[in-house]
Length: 240
Image (cartoon, rainbow, N blue to C red; front, side, top):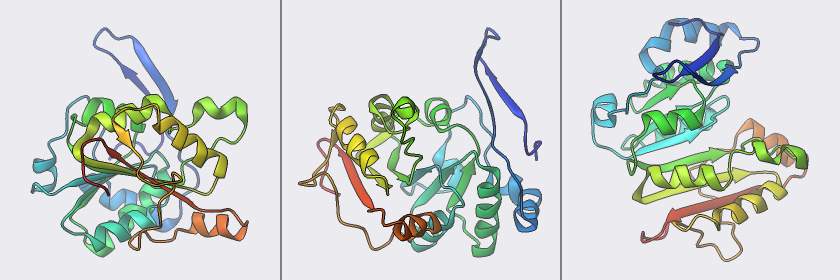
């Protein structure tokens, strides 16, 4: 396993740095640290500029669902366990969350879930082929509530275009947030992407029975935040 915390600099072939950031670490519990030491090499895929072969990675041709920013990974593991005929790829930079999910993967003996610990934009652009993903799950992304920080929001037009390009013809994007202004933002930004369709009359869909309630979600409910669920699909496909 590589160093748990390090500064990562991506370089193009000409050696010019195109991005530099610190992978977020933070304090680890003993459980998370043990999982990182024992299972990292078994379930974590190192970032590279090589397109992933999903069939080789998972050993089958089952649909691949990518979750972006899985946090501590509770819902990720639960969903993967419920749907063994799907493959799941979780992308997260938060080290404690990676450690926690590694523990759950091992404890549940999940064969259909892998992790990449890296920036999602780079992973999608460099490692995921176009029209290869069945769906994206993005649960409770950082809302960046201050107006001056809106440019940092993950779900905006350009990124939604990237997600759409990676989706298969029957692909979907499933987003959940407890921040109403961000939910409205997502709906507005999705309207700018011609290939994405929102079939819900008011932009919001009904909750699905298979998505577990997370600790983060519970905290939002305690604060009286309304949970907003948004499902988008590629044009020309059947409704979700």
